[in-house]
Length: 182
Ligand SMILES: Cc1cc2nc3c(=O)[nH]c(=O)nc-3n(C[C@H](O)[C@H](O)[C@H](O)COP(=O)(O)O)c2cc1C
Image 1: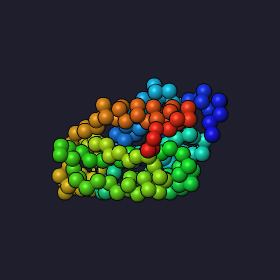
Image 2: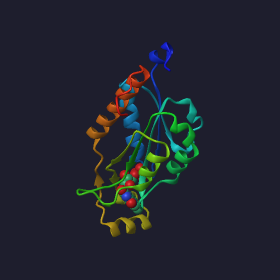
Image 3: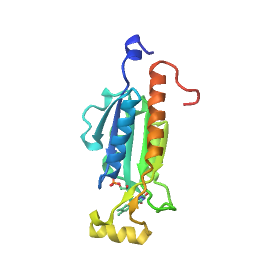
């Protein structure tokens, strides 16, 4: 049940991310910026540095995908905080495939697993960025094997649109009028 106080304050949203080379972190920060512009009070944190997850009203959790898996910090965050996350609105994203058409073709499984684990509202797969110049030698070999090309394939318009939807939905929920079917 929402109190009048609830209805008057901005929803506190944790945007937790796991990123190896920085492009997923940039997506998380962009999402937080849009949430703020949309009337929310976001906090952006690397997933392993979140200290008090219960202090938030809602969560956006995202991970870069490596060799078909979410990064351990994001998987651990979801598992460790499953009980808290299950009781609040959660949106998930995987930052992974690169190129056009996107490589690798198979979607990231851990996002789908996390979706079920915490009964999240949605899991989005967002194209990522690949820059060979910052990769380790084993990483270069791995991307050669899957044929993933260099480039920044992040779709900022889509990211903005998604974040704006999340902000609108949270404001609706706080006002006590959740969208039907969500
Ligand atoms: C060694 C390596 C393996 C990767 N494996 C996958 C993969 O299995 N699936 C996928 O969707 N993207 C994969 N990617 C693409 C990354 O997820 C993408 O570059 C992402 O934007 C990196 O995020 P970060 O900069 O936050 O670490 C891989 C990239 C590298 C370098």
